[in-house]
Image 1 (cartoon, helix red, strand yellow):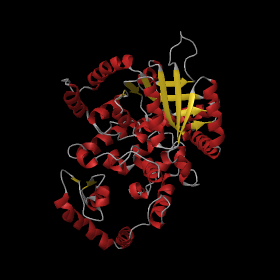
Image 2 (tube, one colour):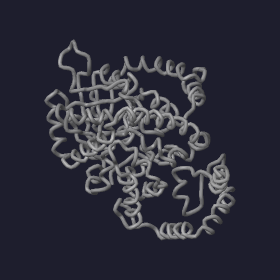
Image 3 (spheres, one colour):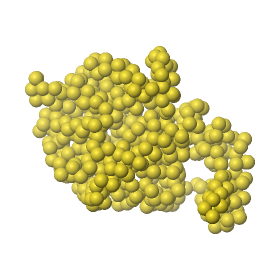
Image 4 (cartoon, rainbow, N blue to C red):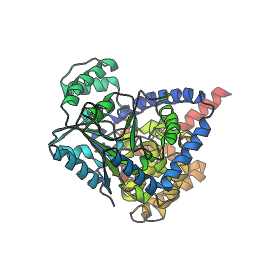
Amino acid sequence: MNELPARIDFAAYSENVPPNIPAAVQQATGRFIGSRQSRIAELPEWEALREAASQIRLHTLEHLDFYLERLAERVQAAGGTVHWAADAAQARHIALEIAQKHGARLAVKSKSMATEEIGLNHAFAQAGIEALETDLGEYIIQLAGTGPSHIIVPAVHLTKEEIAELFRQKLGIEAPPDPHHLTQIARTVLREKFLRADVGISGANFLVAETGTLVMVTNEGNGRMVTTLPDVHIAIVGIEKVIPDWEALTVLLKLLARSATGQKLSTYTSFITGPRRHEHEHGPREFHLILLDNGRSRILRDPLGRQVLKCIRCGACLNVCPVYRNVGGFAYGWFISGPIGAIFSPQMLGVERAGQLPFASSLCGACGEVCPVKIPIPQILLHLRRRAMEGDSFGGPNAPVTARLLASLSALAFRLPWLYRLGTRLLPLLTRPFSRAGWIPGLPPPANRWTKVRPFPVFAARFHEWWKNRKRTSA
């Protein structure tokens, strides 16, 4: 299996943050849902766009080798250098080698899920190179020492009061919990870093094979600073981000911002085709594109599972997911959370490390309904559950006897209402000794496999009471 970065230490992090996660997450995702609905209502052709986008992404994945070759040719023709990384270790090595070749001491980064995937910041730090996040949300979680809890809003789990306290602790700056004031502080700190940086590192939302163009969709100006001020620009991008042409891009751009934040278009949409051609132009002297596989080729072999690679990272499925909205992103144990993480991580990490994620879903279907590129997330969740229980399709051993036994007991409980009701009364009592501040940091075997890497919410057992009151009120 490909080498992958270690998980975040959720047990330590849960000491003070997770109990506040649901309220902060629900408030933010609720705004995104409302804004998305408003923007979609303005486009009567929305469903036609979704279907077109789905077909574009499927077509590209089916002919990925062709479009990647075309992309590489166009990037090189524009003066850039293309590197192929089979796994995370190779991608880190290539990026580090480029930085060291130029004597870099400071690298500024735009928001990039690919660099989270390969653990680039840690590798640079070990080599004595500072890798500084410049997206506001990423900068905040870098100060906090955690990974992102949302695909597009990495610090969505933190309140403005918590961010102000973080700035006081890490920057020594007393600041009121005012978003505008906190943003100004971050801007002042980061502006000086941009001017001193030796290397700029970014990801990409799309790679246009037709012209070798890297497309970045952001709401902050940091992306343009990262990709134009330093002399060297390194872009690390998953191979699935390639798209055929500009016509395909016009379809996808109409869907991305509306699905992600409820905007018609993001504040900044940048198109980068190679390095600068003349001295009087703005931009880097060198442009390096690292195309990252890291298990994606393996995923492509599964006709159903590979549809996860259609994802355009809008985060809409997270915003509507009842599980994500109640446990937050850290519960998923890797850099991509929510429903898309529950079908991406198992295929990337294997059953030993993420085989339980497909089971962390209510299968309500909301994620599949909102996906702008029509990824059949509920069907893939069921598909991966079957793979996890039947064998070693993810690269791990057969499902243990305890897992099969628990699955059988769960099925029995759902078939017998009296047993289900008894369980909902007993579980809160049985788990009370293990709970702390509304969370269970550790469970006994075999359930401790879950709490080794993430806390577990206490059993509330309030549904039946809520349902009775609802029926009584409606009557």
